Image (cartoon, rainbow, N blue to C red):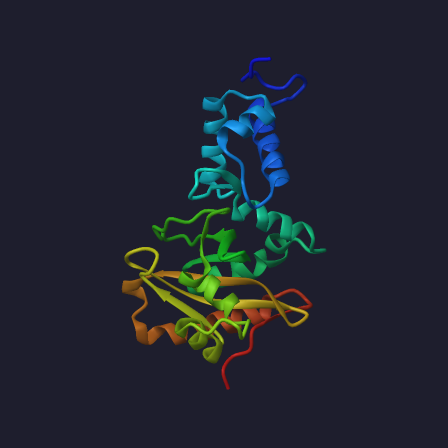
Length: 240
């Protein structure tokens, strides 16, 4: 039987159904991934059509392509699965804290979680004055290169890279033009029952955040976040 690119019978939105079936198939094959041709056969889809679906999933971090060309689940899908196992909806619970941080600093604020070696952005609150940053909910970046990721990694003593060790000693992390020219960030880990479950960051153009002001911004962020986190949540301790 020849593959078909037609929407599944009974599906209200064929393209969405196809993407969800693709995610389910990637989850079934596991971390080793699957070649495009094998995935097309498994799903009964034409390869060009499936390739477009995978491109959309990759764009949002829900799928990724391994060096050998095979496809597997991406960090955004893994992060969603991790959130499902929690009793709480972190973006909804922490949105008041993000909004308070944005209002207090006048800057862009992000929420992220670890997904393997990456950090995935779960939410963002933008200020009235635009901050031109390449970020979106679902985007993933290597954790060790971001303020969000460093704040989370600093909660694990096994991570001893200099930037992470410095973040552990201070109680907050920073990143300066390592992911995007002209952009700096400070980050704080959010704990539940003593374990890091997320991080918040404040993103600032470097001209508004000379290096000497990073600690001041981190103090402000800590004060605001500590006062607005929901019950049961706390910040990683500040350096003594």
